[in-house]
Amino acid sequence: IHIHGVLVEDSLPNVRFVNIGTNGASTDSYVKEKLLLKQIDAVNPDLAIIALGVNDASGKNFTKDRFVQNYHKIVDAVLAVNPNCAIIFVSNNDFCGYRTGHNKNQPLVVEAMKELCNRYHASLWNLYSVMGGSKSIYTWQKHGLANTDRIHFTSDGYFLEGDLLFGAILREYEAHLKKLADE
Image: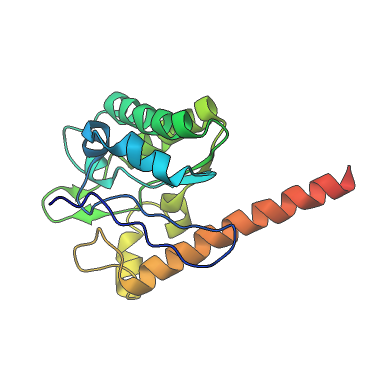
């Protein structure tokens, strides 16, 4: 018996939150996954928030081109299921790994995501900038928001990230509604 995923649903009308992913996976992992399109089809998203790539960006073998190519394949899989799906890219958080040191690839990651936004008419939530930029992971760790590995957040850190992202989406939505009302 193989389990390829579990879809847990609740009774909230019109809202379904689905998390697809595995800790430690790179974008290469998603691109190679043969069931990805089938799993996305089962969800049929109206909004895809794509927050991947820390494992891609952390190594010396990082290339912006491969990163972008993998993102193209992932986003194209989402849009193959629903061409009208809205896309929000979330940049990598600031991090400093034990073996890799401080992430020097972050500017290339943000540059790549901006290119992806232009291609797909998508939005970018720059978590790196929201955190405070270069070496901000140390501040987050000092305040109990990042783990001692200086890569992953604590539960409080993930809750804060979620609150900040939701707040950003809500502000943009309210600004859009105001703009429509003013027209």
